[in-house]
Structure formats: C-alpha cells, structure tokens
Amino acid sequence: MSEEDGDGVDHGPTSSHCGDHTGGETDDRDGTRDLEQVVAAVRDRVDPDEDERTRLRDVADRLMERAETAAAELCADTDVLQVGSTARNTWISGDRDIDIFVRFPPSLDRETLADYGLEVGHATIPDGHEEYAEHPYVKGTVEGFEIDVVPCFRLESASEIRSAVDRTPFHTRYLQQRLDDELAADVRLTKQFLKGIGAYGSDLRTRGFSGYLTELLVVEYGGFRPLLAAVADWQPPVELDPEEHGRETFDDPLVVIDPTDPDRNVAAVCASDNVARFQHYARSFLERPRIDVFEPDDPEPLTEVDLRDHLERRGTTPVAVRFEAPDLVEDQLYPQLQKSLDGITTGLDGRGFDVFRATAVADETAAVLVELAVSERPAVERHEGPPVHVRNHAEGFYDAYADDPDAYGPFIQGGRYVTERDRAFTTAREFLESDRLFDVGLGAHVETALEDGYEVLSGDDIVTLLDEFGSELADYFAPRP
Image (cartoon, rainbow, N blue to C red; front, side):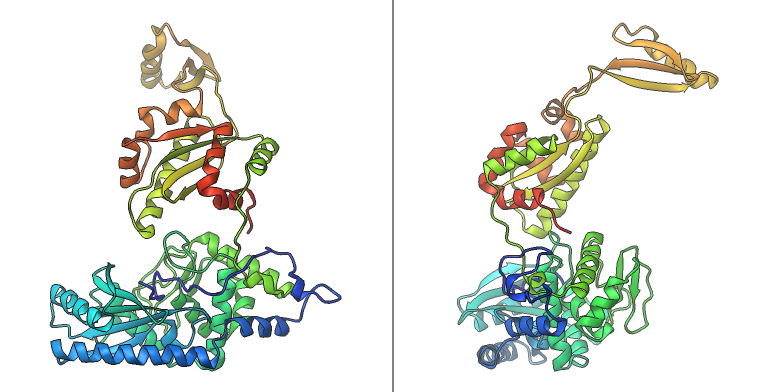
C-alpha cells in the first residue's frame, strides 16, 4: 500500500549522490551557496507545477466519484476520502500515488468490510489487482498514477481503530488543519532531504522517517530550517507530544506521540542510526548548504578488482552464508534477516572469531556477510573454572576434567582451576557448515531456507556475490554517515 502515514515510501526524483562533497552546480567562489539559494533550487525540483497538480486532481476526482457510486450501492452509510501526501499537498513532483479510502460504518464485521472494499476497489479500478495488508485492498494504474483503494471503518476517534489503516483519515484531517502552503513546501523539502541521506521510509528495511512523521516534525518546529536547527541539537531520547496527551512511555530514541492517538509513538519504527544520520546531515547542511545532500545515493556496482583491493587493504577475512531468499514481502523478510544476522554474528563472536562488521542482503538469493578480524583459532581453548576455595563448585569442575585424556589440566592459575580442551571449530567455515549453525537465533523462514540448503563462501569466493549484490557491496565498502 502506498499510503505513507505508516509504511509507505514516497518515490521522488533521484540522481547520483556525492555524500558530503559539494556538487558542481552549488559551487561559487567560496565553494558553497547561500541556504536560501539552495532551498530555492531544490524547491524548483520537488514542487509539482500547476499542470502536474491539475492532472492528478482530475484523475483523483474521477476515481473518487466512481468509488462513491460503487460504495453507495453496497452500503448507504459510507463516504470516500483522498488521504496521504497528495491530499495534504505534501507530495513531491514525480510522485504518482493516489490513495482513496472508503469508510464503512463500524457496525460491519471485518469480513464484510473486506468484501465490500474489494467490490468498490474493482469498480473503481477495473484493471486493478488485489493486495493484502491487514485486510485486502485493490491496487492499479490509471493514466500513469498508482492508485490504492482501501476500505476502513469510519470511527469517532483514532483510539477506537480496528486496523492500522483506520488511523489514516484522522492523520489527514489533523494535518490539513495545520499545513499551509509554506509549511507544505517545507515538508516536501524535508522529505527530499531525508531521501537524499537515505533515512526516509518506515518500511522495515529502511526503518526511517515516514511521511506522516516528517509532516508532524515540520509542523512541530515551524518549517524546514528550524527543524534542522533543532535536530542538530537533539539529545536522544527526544520526546515530542504535540497535543500533550500521551499516556504511555516508550523506549525509543525518538518519541512523537500521535496527535490523534495518545497511546502511539509515530516514530516507533525509526532506528537510532537514522535519528543519528538526520542529526549528522542537519549539522553538515546548516554549516555548508549544498544541493547534493538532497540527492539519493545510487552507487555503481562494485567490480571484482575493487572488491579484491578492499579485502587486501582491510586484511579481514570475509565469510558469507548464501541461500534462497524466502518468498516474503520486505517487511517480513528484513526483520528475519536481521535476527539471523544477529544470531550468526553472536555465534561467531562467541567462538572467538571476532566479528569486525557484518550485513545482510537479499534479492533472488539472500546472504549474511560477515567480516572477521580472526579467521582461525588454535586447536585448543582455555576454560576457566571456579576459584579453588569455592569447594563444591571447584571440586565438580576438577572431577569433570581430571580423567579427560584430551584435556590439558586441570591446573591452577590465578587461584582457580583451568583446563585447556579441544576446540569444536578452528575456522568460521567449520562452524557455519555444521549443525551448530541452527543453534543460533535465526528467523523462522530463514531457518527453513537454510535447512533446504545453503553455501558458505569465504575469502576470494565472496566475489561470486557481485553479480547479484554489486551495489550493496559498494555501499558496504564505502559507508557514509
């Protein structure tokens, strides 16, 4: 669903990003442009012109009329709303999303709501197809615009919601009452800024700033520039409550209480790294305004020569577990990949292989890539027992190893029993190829995929990942804030 109050992501203009380097068109004699000049230049790119607005409005009005007609034939007590960024005048030029919500009375049960919603959706978009969130909806393309027709319940308060989409009309109404043309323009700037730095989107792959959260922040601080000034000085955890009605406490780096629901943190999905990333670039941009901060990074895929150069320079040992990617939507897949990444790195660290850095990537296949500072361990490992004076435990430890012909010791060192015993795995590959891999915490679908078969790559074998993950590896070996 393209609706950006929660997980949807705007798709604005993109071009090559140059990190913190000053773009050519922003140069003058001192290497920068005045902030107002940069803002004006970016606004020229992101503000829809009148022709674009007219085309979107015409398509939206026609589809709303279709939806109203179809809904009235099913249930008299319904209404139809346009929601999301195009309804709030915060959409970026080039965005093609129109979100139409059909509100049914709360007396309907969920099954009937879903059935009616699909019927209205297909009547509105005859060539549309069904997709599923908490309940099914219809998605399609009309004259180049991406259309979602979503059923929800018409409620008196967002605290009464029966599914997540029920909140959206409340969000739209709240912001329409507070966003004037100038603030809406600043929202577009802020969205493009967050896209440029890679922190926009509340999907569970990005874990960044949703459209709704971005709009609330601009309203709260009064514009783009005052927002950046505030973000530059944030001291997480940051807590904002626009309506001063919050009833819950949250353990998140950024807390923004939903103005329409006192029990919800709008920023709950936003990762601490993305909060910190926003701070870094807010400070950097205010110090040196430039256009390229607004331009998303699309790195060239890493070449085999470049990858080998990185590995030689770093002196680390890369290993990867590669398997068929589970057939899941991204918001289900990436939490499972993250859990599996955490489990595998913990398993490697616990066996002395000293994880340096790691990442997980997915396309047709998936891979957990880990760089190790230690590639091989001795054949024996040290195992310390309790102090000798702790009699019961010490005697138990001693007796356990006293007759083990393969152990060195037990002997006394530092006042405690110590033994040196055979190590189960002397290389990371041995561990990753063993059944003990399944003892670490893995995502359920990832574990099933691994049970069906996987390969372990190490050293120069990593180059086989380039065909599928060249861009991801370019990002990995050239990290930016």
